[in-house]
Image: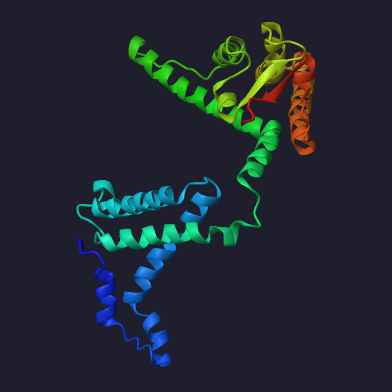
Length: 303
């Protein structure tokens, strides 16, 4: 470990080829490690200092402390061998690095106005973010959907393992009956109890509400998610059932099953196409929301 403060200055003074009176030595001196290492350590945290003053509006003293703490984090990470992943430190702990990094953050604070005078203020950025946050995009809703189903997938695995341990046999948690139960309990019952929120919606800060009502009704949620989930999975189940009849029958029954199968496939295609077109056209209200008189709002509050 290098614990001698200003050792980098002594190394520079003893090893540099710089001669102030000879300009031909300037470039060579700037290429030496005794110059490059401290300079780049200073430059490393200049953006950090600018950011702290511009975005977080920290004071001069707090910027110095924050820069020192960040530099200390770097040094301790190196000293611990990336928190004991490696058997020994992978770089020398140097108090001069702490000094140079802290100087860099301080310098960033001092020169911040030179770079930030043309940028919007923090208040204006917050205002723009709030305005954007109030618009519930389909992408935001899709992220909520994915979070919900990832959570349900994990929950399925946990329940399946617990049931196997309890009953000593494999238990399927992916069949149609289980999915219907899952949708009913999670997207209808739980959403009713939380007044329009699921885990995914909570994360992206949106909420399902009913037109002209302070609290969403169970009926509205039942209609909404019946159209969205029960219709899709119901059609999928009916398609599988008609395909089985088609494969196992002959004559008139088989022909009837073929026509039913084609009709169901067409209906499901229309369902999927409607959702795809809604995303392409960026519609804010989807068909199942029109049917249930519900819509999605942002829960982001203006500070």
